[in-house]
Image (tube, rainbow, N blue to C red; front, side):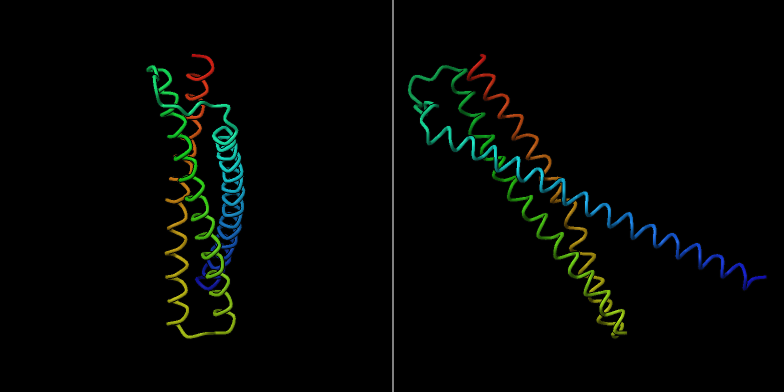
Length: 162
């Protein structure tokens, strides 16, 4: 009776591990798509702002600025800086995600090759460390991207509407 229960428990555990691996894979796939989308949008916004600077359509003279002009200028620079930081954090996030996936693949190879426990433990630690770094970078990337977009909206409001 106990033997049959232990078999059921092992099968149940196996199914749960399979589901967890599938969900983890799906999560990483979606994370990659979200980061790529934000990187594209961030680079496009930076390109547009750089075009404003180079094209001369936006007067960069700091002389005789009123309060609204000063706030618009501050919003423009703040959004440009925040979007550059956001793109940098997105690239770091992508790099960490790729390194994490590489170590996970190497860990799987080590397990298939029946490597020593020390090697497996070493790769587990590296995978865990890189995996834990991805999410804080992702969160910071999203926050700086959102604040950067907010400042773009504020810039356009003050510059063209206000």
